[in-house]
Structures are given as C-alpha cells and as structure tokens.
Figure 1 (cartoon, rainbow, N blue to C red):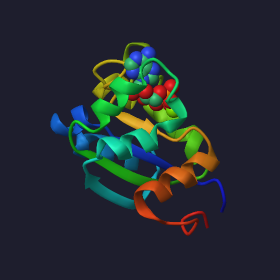
Figure 2: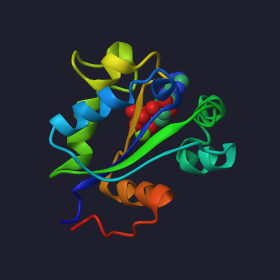
Figure 3: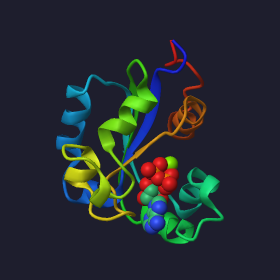
Figure 4: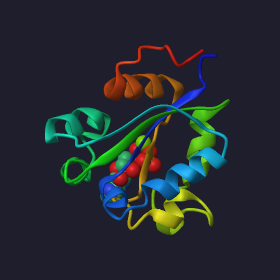
Length: 141
Ligand code: ADP
Ligand code: MG
C-alpha cells in the first residue's frame, strides 16, 4: 500500500559506537519490517545531494561533512503509517529534547549526531529510498 515505507540511516557516530544492532532490534520490536539494508559510506557529494533540501540552513555544511565522515547503515522500513510512526520512535531532532525511550534519546549524542535519520513525508520516503536502493516504488505495496 502506498505510504507504508520510510527510509532511515543510522548515522556515522552511532555506527562507530556499535549501536547498530541495538537500534535495529528496537526498530524490529516496534513493528517495522526491513525491506532493504546496506552499510555504506557517503561521499561528500552524496551527502550534499541527500540533504540538498537543507542547503540554505546554517548547519548544512557541517551536516554534510559529518554524514560523509564515517559509515552509515541505510534501511527501507515498512509498516502501516511508517513515516509518522518512525518519527515517533526516534523522537525529536535534538536528543536532549527527545522523549524517554526514543532512539535519539538513547543513542544520540547531540543535535547533529542524533543517531538516526527518518523521512519526513511519504513522498520523501520514496525519493530517499531510491537514493540508496533504486527501488522505484516496489516496496509501496
Ligand atoms: P530531522 O532529522 O529531525 O528531520 P532536520 O530535517 O531539521 O531534522 O535536520 C536534518 C539533520 O540536520 C538533523 O537530523 C541533524 O542531524 C542536523 N541538524 C538539524 N538542525 C541542526 C542544528 N541546529 N545544528 C546541527 N545539526 C542540525
Ligand atoms: Mg528532516
């Protein structure tokens, strides 16, 4: 069904700290199925492209540099209401403001190194999934 996928990336610092397994466990326990997964390393150009929507924001340059500074784990996740439910599971952008029990609260370090990305709309979930996996909309069944 359309609208049931989201794209996440476990960000470099969380991967380097070996949080990948614990984060994936919590994602699965929350009812998300993993439809695609890879560990990879974004080039600065890829990080620029992925976050192009933020290019005029003051944090853009640092964010791009950070996202290309180490390995990431990208996943397409499927669940009913995936985008909203995943953003609830990860919590607020700033781990210090994220609710207790959320992934960013548990595994985030600061506003930039906030452990995970989550798509912000169904449309962007498809765009971002295709960025990493070239899936077209085959998971949106
Ligand atoms: P979210 O990831 O919660 O959707 P945004 O889309 O607003 O948040 O920002 C994208 C990413 O940019 C954030 O996840 C975070 O890593 C980084 N970021 C956002 N705001 C700041 C900030 N004020 N300072 C440093 N990094 C930031
Ligand atoms: Mg966002």
